[in-house]
Amino acid sequence: MKQFTKHSIESAPEESKELLKYGEKKYGTVPNLFRYMAGAPASLEAYNSLFAIFAKTSFSAGEQHLILLAASIVNDCAYCTAAHTRASKANGMPSSILNAVRKEKPLEDERLNVLVNITKKLTETRGNIVVSDLETFYNAGFTPENVLEIITGISLKTLSNYINHVTENVINESLEPFAVGKEIED
Image (cartoon, rainbow, N blue to C red; front, side, top):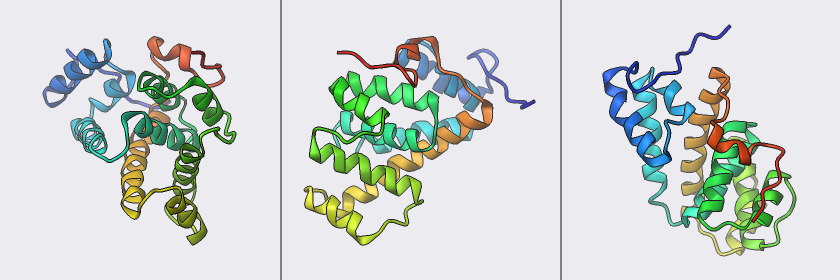
């Protein structure tokens, strides 16, 4: 049995309390991921800091969450798949795009299809992609700098996906409509 504590704001180490309060304010509840990370304040701080940094990339908020969703699917993280499906939808991604990504089908939008595919390949190969993958990405209007931004997002998801796996985290009730296997509706 794994011995991870799912903290409340009250039980968390002092260094994590403000970040848990921030999570509660932002999401309406303290995400289970935050509750587990709170036991190691540096992990919770790293996640929130890297999330804020990734938000500064040239991608739109919807595209950012699509990148995070694609990496989470490759990493087989049900929690983050649900969370970033909800966030992508909240940031304007159509249900048809989200359902296709979740079912690992080609997307109607070629630019987004290329974005999702490069994210998946970078995640699957741990960055060891081939030149033709980059050429396809650049031909879709993306830049080498965009590759670096995607890797920043993958780094963020590596942190949270792995923590969700080792803690055996389950999705919050608010994420249930976006759980793996559910069809996302408009």
